[in-house]
Amino acid sequence: MASVDKKRASSAKLEPGDHSIDRATPWQDESSRKWMLAWSLRLPNGKLLRRRTQSDKHKDLRPKARKKAEELLDQAKEGQWKPSSELAGYIERISRREIETSDLRPRTKEMYLGAVRLILGDCKKHTEKDGNQHKYNLKNESIDSMKNVRLIERCLQEIAELHGYELAEKAQVILSKYVIQEMRRDGIMDYNPIRGMDFKLKRKAKSIAPSKKGGVALSRDDYGKTLEYLLALEPASLVPERTKNNLEHLKETDLRQAESLIDLTLLQMTTGLRVTEANGLTWAGHVDVGEQGSVHVTVDPEMSKTKKGRRIAILDERVAQRIIDRKSKYPKSIYVIGSPADGNKEWSRSATAKATRMLYLELAKTLKINELLTERTHVWRATLNTLLREHVSDVERSAWFGHTVEVNRASYTDLSDTSAMLHASQNLRNNVG
Image (cartoon, rainbow, N blue to C red; front, side, top):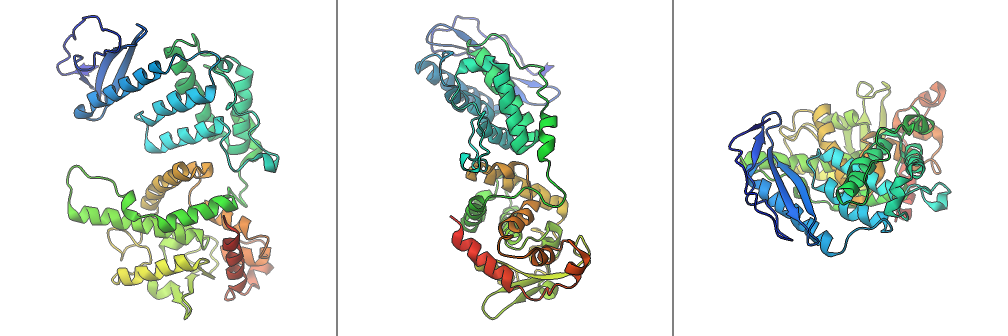
């Protein structure tokens, strides 16, 4: 199991407040190649806690363990948790911290944190105003309520009904591993009442499975909030730090990818273009800049999933200007977005998917939009189609998005007239926020 230099640590008794991090010997796991450290902490009340810390890098191992020890001591100083303590406080202080400091993959970590919000009823989409609130959330329950399996079951099934099986499954993992298991470590529970339980979450989620005709849409407020956030977002904030091979050309590619990712998302948000359509746009064949700064893009039949060409406008003048600016900033690029490494090559779908996944998870975390934990680029088509349906007929919307509602409607719709969509978009912007 272990390799390198695993010596026996001192067995001297720890005094209250002391830990064995500095005298324990780390080792490297042979299968995962992660560095491991087993250590103990004596709480002020004399209770001995045993923990194990792991890290990809040897140098990060002890600092990570010390930080955990400090957190445990801080918690102990504030007083021991009791069965009557608020469950929400425990989840926020203990469970959330365990997730945030874990070695989970970024996407999994953000999905878990999104599920934590749902467990506590923090959901702006399903509010009491809509008559569809998370009425079985656990926010106002006590720690002792974790013994009530029926209470937990109702909470999880409600999440499945409102948000789908995937998030409900993550919520069950959180309650079992990051809530109840931590409670057992803290000595306030001596068993896990939901281990191995089948709450029939898939069955509950079937009734709200997305239809092929639509999908998941953001609310008007969340759409506006996301649009404003991306317009103000600095690409440099998305560029990862490089500790090795810190070459200038790699930095430039990272920065250009971040900038292109933001612009691609804004373009899709304000046009409803599919990602393959947006990536396929070229300056010479698909973009028309009007005298007043309006920007229209043409989708060729061979670019469209339904093989129907169409001409549409960018529905926000700020985004339109950003697209115009790209042409002058990258004059040698053939594609409007293009591959970050070479603007004369189309950005591949697989590379785009990987980049957008990270951005959407960041948006979900920062803006607290749970839909973006699981939804990707199709969400903008569903959102625009939903928000604009009050102002634009189904005939015009079907033509705009390249849908085939009925053959006669799609075939006899004037695709060159975009005034209705532009007017509706202006109304939408005026009412956002």
